[in-house]
Length: 471
Image (cartoon, rainbow, N blue to C red; front, side, top):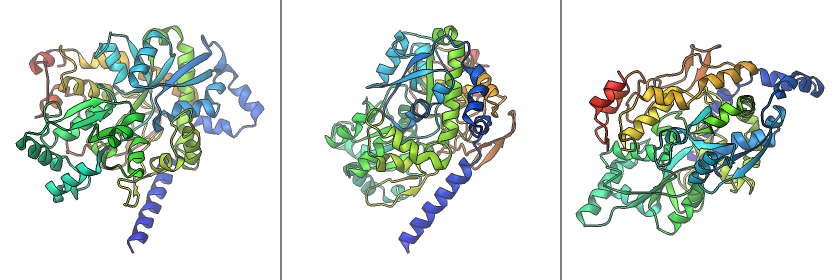
């Protein structure tokens, strides 16, 4: 009977996946129905006036590099007059540095990276912008089998909850402290990564101080599994397919996905230097248009297996299709001996306005940089966010494509437990849940109050000083 229930759950998951992705067709889909000659004539104007056509865009080997790879492999860049080479990079630091010096025209970036680059968090300031959000969700927290068993022993009830909190981990840490043991080492992919903030958010919600109670280190995504195997770390937060690789290898168990931490959270963006964007505005717009169309195609469920085949290649993610397809087709396996569970929204590329660069998302990342002491001087959060996230450029591209787009720049988070409709748009847009697992809500109109709500933090800025600039 249990096998039948699992099959039924997966069938429902795929059905929901079909339902939630079925309405992603826009003007570009209509264009694709025209004969080839008519299509090329209709789009001819789109290739005129491009300041630069031969481009190199960087990626990190993760499943959410897919919009850039698909836009190149399926001809969307070419359709808009661009000759794009995809360059696989070794680390996020490589991505940051190569975009900064112009060795890459643009790149797959962590959502916080262009903000950090602009503000000089962890590097020399380099104004960087994004006009395109690459995806929602896509990460998870995985731990070694040994740590998992210790957590189950420490608090069996907590480990049976779904989603899993860090309460059991807190008890393991307290036990180690009592015995005089060194803090355990966890890894994330970059100091200003969503992964860092998600891991900290999850730990802090259970009273774990991520700066004192554990040791957090940076490891590039493809090296996570090897470091877990070598016992250099006890756990990590990373994007796919590097959680499922550990699960399939029998090296660890996934505790919680970032979808469960924050439903439909922003993950990656397409980033370029501000000076590049200003020097090549038509080229930038063409790239954004191609990426939007690639995302539309990718979120049609009948295309997901082709996406898996494309990105699994050695030149991109370099992982087995059976591993990559798990999260990309609406399911997720938390442990090797457990059946896959339905998670239809683990990877969202277009629906729920996923491609729109919300200023409120940028502002949320700035609050986390403040919360954990990465920003040490008070600043106007909204002004900083608006200098990096560029919904104006996105709207120009979307208008040319004839697709619906938001007419507002910000939205609350943690206030929708189910599907809802964004009416502040050129046409109503179906949206997904946005709940935080701890029940908190985020109102971009009350940024300082939001920061006051965190009991665990490492802030180096006076909230009174911050309030003066953010009234």
